[in-house]
Length: 463
Image (tube, rainbow, N blue to C red; front, side):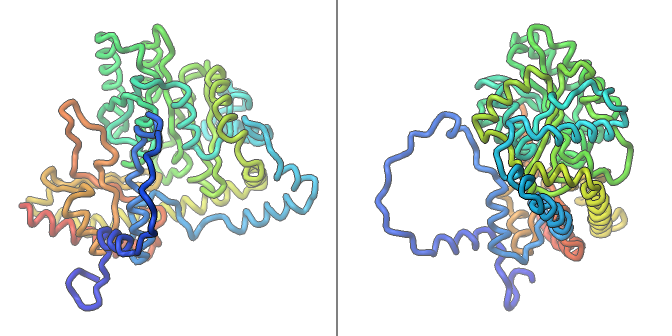
């Protein structure tokens, strides 16, 4: 329904807030302030929380905002069968329910190493890694956080692309990192801009503060783009060149690697570091299998792994043994591979429907002058489409377009969340991220229609 008609539902986030505000608050005295740490004070609230709250308050919203996986295709039957098999044997069941090691179940790490070798198209041993170079974590997000926590002091520099994954950016800010961003294009992070930035930092005496380069190498969040083949070995070459007084590392976030829908198969950045000295690769079970398993894994230099293990031991003693047993058996019995193929088919259909609907709504023949600068990415995998509007448009959370979209019953992520400010403090406000991952297939076309109606109205008013 649209605003203004009979029986209209008000989808706005303001309406959701008013519902909460109108609830009678409990009578309590004002407490003294908490003595929060500097780290806690630096930690920003995730901007996605409010968007998820709005969706929960108004389930009829078509939600292209939350970066969630397809719920209908979660591997319920496979996990039920595996769990029954684990608990059919008392000894195996007790083992799965007991504490494990901090580094992770060894048979799983062995299987994950073989899995990485298959993904690279390499023979066993050609990556020059052992199971003891891998750690199993509680999701790849924990891998990223632990690595950053081990490497960063306040004021240390991390280089990333602009735009980039905003959830990890929040973690970096909480650790006091100085995040420097370089541009990206259709070939991913501009690695020559990385070298130029490193040269500038060296000239200003700040190279010693550079700790790592963060790169989402496959179908990235938010743009859906990948780092091109030639740029991968070049990035390793660059960090080796500038690793003079200390090693500068590359943190390769490959969470979406296995959700390739078409296009070329790229080797990882990690594969160009046969010494296992300069690169880390982090992958996950969340995107290719099930987020409820809550497992990630990372391969990294051995001296870094030792420090990460110390921190993880203080966090949780090790990731869930039961979840690791389920993941191991899913890889052994073929459930993982079969489910991944189902996901690829589902996401390919959703991506194609999203792109076709955008093309239908903003086709070249239908565009006029004010729509001519509107375009979007065509990802070869992953869950995201990145939509760019004319520069005079405002897609920000505070902008009129966002509220209009919410009232029309559709959500997106403002692109500004994913950008780092330039030297003048400016952040682009004319992009948006669309995630088709959790959107039911029947809702994709209506959702894009609602989005297009709001965008066209906004551009017409601003023209």
